[in-house]
Length: 409
Image (cartoon, rainbow, N blue to C red):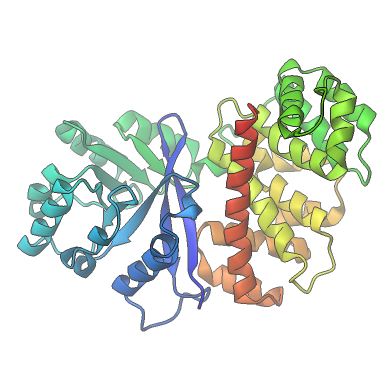
């Protein structure tokens, strides 16, 4: 039996990811009538917290877990350390005396509590003193109404989270309304719709991407590009010397560093560093998501009934958020890169085998299990392979980030 789970980033005002809401479904078809909220919560906890003792899916950050009425009354969260996750009280919970007693006990024992999809009503007023985070679905509750509630209750340590923030305009409106945290895919869209010129770091990124898209990497060209950017040069040398174990003399030249890495590791180095180098005002989670998609697509190629190479799949996933990273229309950016027509068609129209693969990656990110099921069938994949590829890609992206950070990249 496999646990179908996706995660949605939760960001603070600085667009830094502080946690993930964990979304559970019983299988990719999401159509099993016998599963209830309690069973979904229990299986999520068992698969991701109970057996391993920690939740690897969140990369060390806090997980937000939905708890229905019965699970709270039965004090299920007390089975886990208080720092394991943030308890989300589902909107379907009845605000009765029994629930209030459970909430007070959890609060007193140090658990962090959030009201999910909150709709202000007198019945919930007595709960608020024991709550740490209130989540508003801005699709259901207008931001203006949220702002009024926030102004009246912005006391103590109570924080507010805006859900389903889909674009930069909504992010700014929620920011101005007083929200502390934000959830949604606003960071997956270009923040500026008008045409902008690429920044110097953005141009460097494109030039490096042009090189790793070639069948064979030209070390001289890569050296020339990196040498023009002091910050990138420093990161390369720090990264390579951090990998050394037995070498007596440190590597001090770019060419020496590039050759030492080898073609495959060089592609991965550029993959990670180049775009993150251009991320000055972007959330790190945006780039982490592109890394995760790249690895997810690459891992599925050997399992799927499609005739594409792993590197094509990797580039398709990696470049799926390029417009968001560089604030340029995707079509214009792709014209600058020597990509195959298959990759371009996949990125722009989600057509062809690579397009289906990308559609699967995007759907899994959003826990859209109906689309996941259709894509899984179209690619003739086993459900278990898709689940494993997603979990491994999350771990890979997290580990890669930690490795690069450790080496001061």
